[in-house]
Length: 510
Ligand SMILES: Cc1cc2nc3c(=O)[nH]c(=O)nc-3n(C[C@H](O)[C@H](O)[C@H](O)COP(=O)(O)OP(=O)(O)OC[C@H]3O[C@@H](n4cnc5c(N)ncnc54)[C@H](O)[C@@H]3O)c2cc1C
Ligand code: FES
Image (cartoon, rainbow, N blue to C red; front, side, top):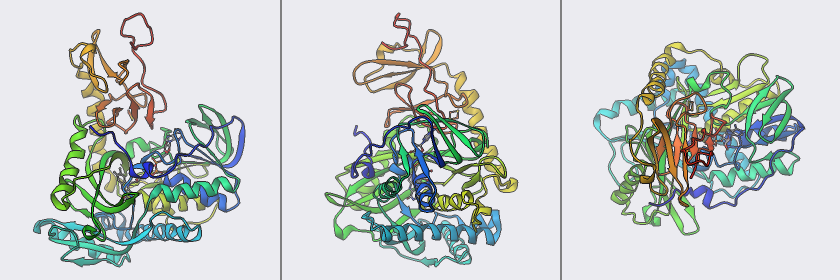
């Protein structure tokens, strides 16, 4: 099986910012170098503040390094739902935030002359059957009321027929790392600091705040937590934002096959379509196949379904890239952006971009930039991280947290497979019963066995094996761990506990 390779990561140079040196003091610390964090750092540095970004890995290797990177206000079907949850004014504010973010990206691309394949394209959300028509028609009406230049069209340039589509002209696509690496360079070039391989594990105090990391402490008046899902449990964002994992493949197509737009269908299985480039020429990106992390035993099949779609409609035969990642969705349709806990708090968060983080992450950075600087922001009220929307949030809260409870309790009842550790092949992870205890067992390519507790170090759900990524994924709030138990992605900040297999080695491996 091909190992996952993100087009965005493969086609850009790797960064090599240093790890944090203990004792630094700055005006603003940014925890997490994805699109939200890097954009916030750039905007705040440009306002003359001293800024330091810390990232647990290399920057832009989180969701932003594995996205599809459509930059659009056309978020599948959103505006009709937003009107229901927040009224027409709320839907209009959301549209303004998305368009504002898109225009900021366009302006920065021009101002800094960023070579990032930024192209204006129409965005389409299409229906495939007559019973979906009314939903698209309602969405076009709601998007028009929200101030967007929406159109209902009966045909698209796609090579297969559609029932009808919501078309939004003047949207964009780009190469997210080429764009954001340049913003990061501008931060560092202007006296800002970027630290990699530095995991934040806590924040103490408020104004000044002490960001505690595995490399020492960083002091700042304000802290922007842009770690995708906040790694801090206070604020309870883990119960309000829910992860979904999705997949993308890239196939080579000819100029004549260019579908000249960005597309997403209405009903599952999701099929998201856009073009991109690499040294070999034009590529078609196909995305979709979302599911709860840690709950899909055959993640390879998800790539297979997307490749089959490319073969069927574009005759594709060459698939040079495939990748997957996950994103968090809010309960009521609007991301959570603002203070972590209460008015006057100097810790800020941005999460729940619902797979539309190119605009939502940029808008979040614009909102947080204003809040940190004490300025009004016209979108801050709608996105308020502490808002209470019980009517809009309750159904999803109950459903998502019932799933968490099921994994918390149900997965404990499963005692693991009664098989010998010797039966685990190189590169394979299995949940085995070892000396009566359910144990997450992985054998690496060198033959070394890693025996781990399956209990996620965030809040105790049991992880599941993801064969395509070779990782242990937690279905509850999306933490991920390598085969050897090392944290890949939070909210967990600690590795899975090692188990001793009773060989006398004492370190749980052999
Ligand atoms: C398959 C897929 C396709 C998508 N396609 C689109 C699209 O077409 N258009 C669109 O708008 N959006 C899209 N999205 C959504 C978008 O990619 C995300 O919303 C966005 O990238 C999230 O950005 P972020 O900055 O919040 O998080 P990330 O990019 O994940 O950045 C968070 C960073 O924080 C770091 N970090 C985490 N914990 C810590 C810690 N404790 N200490 C220090 N650092 C830490 C991580 O290493 C990471 O670098 C897609 C999402 C998926 C899953
Ligand atoms: S991510 Fe919360 S329990 Fe695993």
